[in-house]
Image (tube, rainbow, N blue to C red; front, side):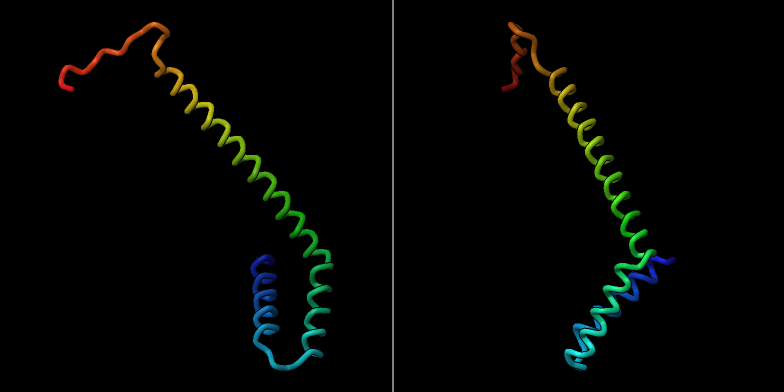
Length: 93
């Protein structure tokens, strides 16, 4: 719920900054507000949680990719003909 609110606030702020004609003074006020939000304890905690989740997800992706590659390699090796073995030719060809 907190992430949704923070995302909504950030989205609104970005849209306002990009769409406003209030001038540089208002832009500076919003920029200062954004810096305060970024440096707040809840924002820091969310950033830390996101970084941790990203690291865990990447580890999972790496593990799954390695497992998949190992399975494909094993399957391909199991289909390789033995040395000196000639495959049976198809008489219809």
